[in-house]
Structures are given as structure tokens and as C-alpha cells.
Image (tube, rainbow over all chains, first blue to last red; front, side, top):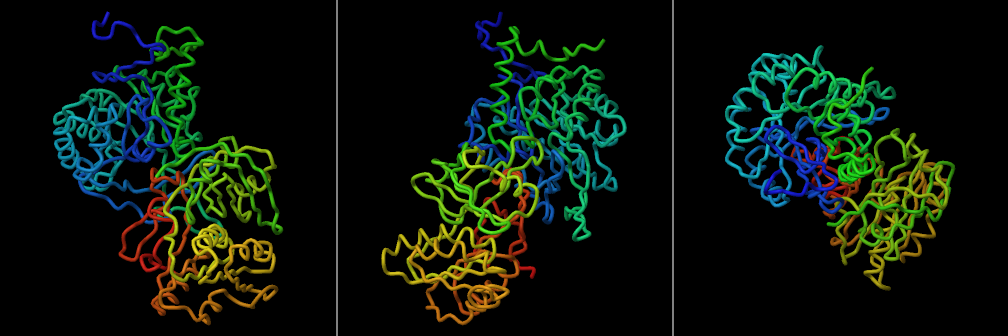
Length: 313
Length: 261
């Protein structure tokens, strides 16, 4: 028994993402929760397992021209264009607040080249507030003609290796679903040293404004998210959890405790709440409440009993 | 700025014309915290489709907890909301955004079409500040009589003289409300408040600039969250940078915006 924590919490919702211990498996997905402060009057941020902040690049990015979002059946498409304040302003203006919350802070990073990933990781390594790094490998590699890092196992492994080498904290690689076989990428980043993988990022889609005969988004394509993508996400989480030994974090259309528990059965150690934050700013806290109630009702010793417990006859 | 997610009860549903609806909610926290020009995000149904909340400017709000929105049925979300019944509950998020800067100097409020909606709350608050000595006017424009007449009485109660224009001349002066604005004799310290279709706000920005009048406009945008998390409601400012309607607005200085019309 752990001498520092002799009495397990009840319900016991603790999970571990590699060396990172979380009070519960519920995180907020990058790009759907701003820098957390936006939600402070609408929920109790301290109840979250971890907070993943808006993706950070080396330099500030203005993002795409409007329109950037459009609703679709049971979901939405976005083409925000990775608008963010850049790593310097993030460290100066956003991290101090995040550090005061007492919740693990996971920083999502993105870059257009291996060098950019390296440099951001080095900058973040100086901070004691950052508990883990989540690597977004869905961006196009500018130097390699725009092919996304996330769609090529070798490139995905190269980015993972560089970040892992420079990072002082666990590294999570966020996988894109826009590939032929997600398990190939998952295995490649696991072999390159990733401490965990998170999936899925948005599915590339498009919407058309018939009246104007134009794409609904200025960027033409956008990332589909929300309940519409949950079945695809569940399938991919299930496949990846069977393919790698490292923890899997499930993302994709989760808006309730039931959704989160389904992902855990499929093999996820933790989950991220994304688009649901837009609809119900309290969604992530509601999921924490709901899985706690489930553990009690089902008489589980801990939520960890749910991980990968799917029965397939 | 404190925001609330509140279950609000519909206390009154008014069909003001064939497709213009006014809903009154009992929404104690949001209504008492609201300022003119701010908006709310409303969930129109309980299911997953349509998924996102819909933004509505605050038409009227009282310290006693009464909150009103005024909207036209333009799509599935507004159609669902229009079908709501008195006594039903909806989830409202608000108050959101930066509203109008209130002033004690003379004012001219210009609302066109559904842009009339936020002007009632603004006129009410401005009227209260002036207690008896009204230096200002309200200009309301619509396509037809039915877009303006049902709201006229509420505006007259604010104490401001009201001038009306309709496209078809069925009520008030025929033509655009901007034409009335051009003929008005306004003092140099007059603040102009405007909300309406984009071409109208673009015209008002030009007309105000020509007369060296400060003009505040309330703009709209599609948005997912309404609170600065999704960054979906960007709009191009005059300096070429993106601003966000939900956080930096919805009220902007007309001079700060890029007008594409």
C-alpha cells in the first residue's frame, strides 16, 4: 500500500498515463477549452483529471479566414487554422494561471517542421507547470511538401523521437484518423518512445452552401467533430489499444459519462471531452460526476477495472 | 465577467408576425447580470441534432430576472425554438460578449430588421440614465409594417422619439432607415448605435464617419461556443487582423471593422 496515500479515494477514479498520475480519467481536448480560464465561472476546473490547452506553435498564428465553422448533422466542421498566441506568450500569459489550478496541465504542441517541434519542446521544458506534452502530428510538414506528419509512420516517429528527447515530461502523441491504418502510426510512435497516444483528431470533411454555390468554410475543408464521429473513434481506439502497450486516450464525440465508459471498455485509459465543451461548458465535470456514480453503483473497486474490459464472444 | 449556464422557463411566447417570434424567459442570474449589446447562447433542443447552441442578442432584460429574445425563423434551430411552449425549459448560457458603451451625451439608435432586437434593451437603459430629459432618437427599419409595428409601443415607452422606415412604405417612411439618418440634425457629440444587416451597418459606418460621429455596431457571426474557446467566430478588422465576435464584440467601433459591402 502507498504510504503517502493509505486510503484510496472513493470512488477511486485514479488512472496513470505512463508516469503521469491523474485523479480521474477526464481531460479537456485541445482546441475546445481555450486556455481553461474561459470556463472558470461555469465549472470547477479543479475537478478535472487534466487540462489540455489550445495547441501552441513556435510563433503566434492568426488562423484561417472566416467562415471557420459550420454545423453538420450531429456535429460540426472547423477550420480554425491553429490560431494561437505562440509559445512565448503562452508561457508568459497563460501558464501562470494554469499553474495555480492544481490540476495537471498538458500542453498540445504543433509545428510545420521537426525543428519547430524541437524548439517548442525545449521552451516548455523550462516550465515546472507543464505535466505532459501532447504532440499534434496532423499539421502539414512544410518542408516535405505539406504531407501531414501524422499520415506517415516514419515522419510520425521522427517527430515523436525529437520531442521525447527534449521533453522533461511524458509525451502523448495525438493521432489523426485520416489514414489508411491508424495502428501503423500508433506502433511507430510507440516504438519511437511515446508514453501514450490520444485519438482521434477530427475527420477531414467538407460542407457546401448550395444557395451561394460555395464551400461553407473559407478553407474548403474542415475537421469534423462531435457525436457524429464517435463510432469511428471507438473503433480506432479499440484497434490501437489492441496494437500497442502504451496507454490510449480516447477522443471523439464524448459528451456523457456513458460515452466515456464505452471508450474505456474499448481500451482507453483516459478520455478527452472536446466539442461537448461548446454545447455544455460543464460537460467535462459532468462526466467526472457520472463515472464516479457508475463506479459506486456497479460496486467497482476502481475505474481502472473498466479499461479494456470489453467482452467479445 | 461572470457567466451562467441556466435552466430558464419560457414565460411568454409572442408571434409578432408570420415568422418573427419574441420569447420571454425567467432567467434570474443571466437577466440581472446582462448589459445592453450582450448576447446569450440557447440550446434549442435536448438531442444531438442540431448540436450547437444558437446565439441571440438580448432584446430586453430586467433586474427581476426577465429575459427576452426576438428572432426570425431562418433555419432548423430557430424553427425548433419558435415551436417552444410557455412553461418549457431551455438551457441558456450568458450573458456573453462586450456590449454597447453607454453614454450620457445625445444618442441615435438605429435598428434594421432583426437588428432591432438589441436596441430595445439599449434604449431602456439609456432612457433610465436620462430620467426625463431625453436627448436622442430611435430609428427602426424593416421590410414591411409587421417587422416594426408590433415593437413600436415598447420603444415609445423608453421615452425616446421613434422614427420608422419600411422598404415597402407600409409603415413610416418608404425606404431605408439610413435615409432618415442622413436627414437628421444631430449634435457633434451624438453617439450612434447600430445593428442590422451588413450593408446597412456598412452604410452607417460611412455616414457616421462623414459626420464625425462615434458609431458602435453590433455584428453577428456563426459561432460554436460564444465564450472564446472555439475561435470560430472570427471577423476581419480594419487593420487586417482577426477579431472574435464573441469576445471582442459583438459590439465594435464601426471604424475598427473592415466592411466588405
